[in-house]
Image (cartoon, rainbow, N blue to C red; front, side):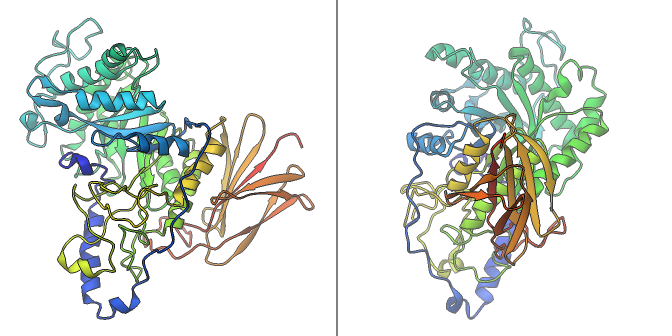
Length: 538
C-alpha cells in the first residue's frame, strides 16, 4: 500500500527486490537479441464467465483485500466478492486523507466506504495508516510520546478526555468513535447493534522501511497509544499488530515485545494487541512457517495470541498486465502462471489453517494498480514497450481490471475472473460454512504434502498435492467406504475406498521460478491440489 498514491494504494509488500527485479528484467530483455522469436502468443480465448450463486457464504475465516476502498467502492466489486464467498474486506484508513488541516477532519469518503461494507455484510479489517505532513517529526509523528489523556496520564479512562496535544491519539479516537458498532456512523444510519468496525490494525508492514522507518521503539509507542484508546472506547474491539512481512527484518516483533514487557500498563491492556497479522507471498509454505515463527516469539515472552494472514498471494506473468513475453526463469522470478496462482491460494490457506491461523485474506480482488503509481497503463504487447518505460505490472487480482480502471485497463477480457476465483470459492464452500480444526500436516519436504482437518461432525477434510515434476499417486487410508473429491475447476467426483485405501492421482508441479526455497521441497508451488471430503459415521 502507498499513501502517496491512494488510487494505486494496494501496494503489496513494499519489497525492494521487486524493483531490483524490474531493473534486471529490463536489462535482460534489452540484451537478448532473440527475444522476439521466443515470445509466447498473448491469450486469445476468453476465460470462464462470472461465478454465480443464489446466496452468499460470507466465510468468517476468509477475506479479500481491497474489495472496496476509498477511491473505488462500486457495487460490482462487492457483488463479485460476495459471489466468491468472502466474509471480510481489508483496506487502509489513511490519516492524511482525513485530517486535511490541523484539527480539521473530513470523514465523508470513509463514511461511504464503511457503510458500504456494512450494507453488504462484510466485516472490516481497517488499517490505521498514514501521517499528515503537518504532523511529521523526522521519520516519526509529532508529540507521539505526549500523554494519551488530558489528565496527563496514559491510563486515563472512558470519562477522561483525549490529550489535544497528541495528534495520533486524537485521530485514533475519532476514527473508533465514528466507526465502532453504535458509533457516530451507525447512529446516523440506523445500523444494527453489531454493525461497525471491530478489527483495527495499527499500521501496515512496520518491519518494512517503505511503510515504517521510525524504529521499533516509536512503533511500540504508536501501538500502545492506539490500543489504549481503542480498548477504552470499545472494549470488544480487536487490536492487530501491523501485518509483518518478515522480508529482511526477522526481529522486529521481538524488539517491540521487549519494550512492551517493561511497560506498567501491559497487562491491563493485553500487551497492546490481540492479534498478530502476517503477510505471506510467493511461497505458500511461508503462511504456516511464519505463523510458527510468531508463536515461538510470543512464547519467549510467555504470551500467546491468534494469528491472521491478512495478505497472501502471488502475481502472474502469463496474463496482462504481467510480462506475458517472459521466456526465461530470471524474467519470471517469483511470478506464477494464472493456474499456479489458484494452486497457491489453496496451499497457502491450508498451511495457514494447519497452524491455527484464524483468518486468511487473499490479496487482492482486482489487479487495480498493484505496486505501480496511479495512471500506469498500456496496451497489451509482446515486450516492445519495455525500452520506453513501464511495460508490465502486477497481476495479483482474482479479477482482471475493468475498462476505465486507473491502471492496466486494456485487458481483452476485462472484468473477468482468473482461475484463482474458483479456488477461493472452493475454499469458502468447504471451510467457510462450518468450524474446523487442524489434525495433521505431513510431507512438507516430501513428494506429496497432506494436510488433514476435521469438523465437529467428524467429517474429514484432506488437502493433498504433488511437489514434484512427475505425476504421482498417493494412497490415503480410508475411514469409511467412500469420499468426495473436489477440484479447483469445480469438478466433484465420488471415490470408493478399495481395501481401505483412496488412491488419488496427482498432477505434477509446473515450472515456477522461486530460487529461495526455505525448505527441502522441490517446488514452491506444487501441482493442482485436491480436497478430499470423507463423511462421518460411515
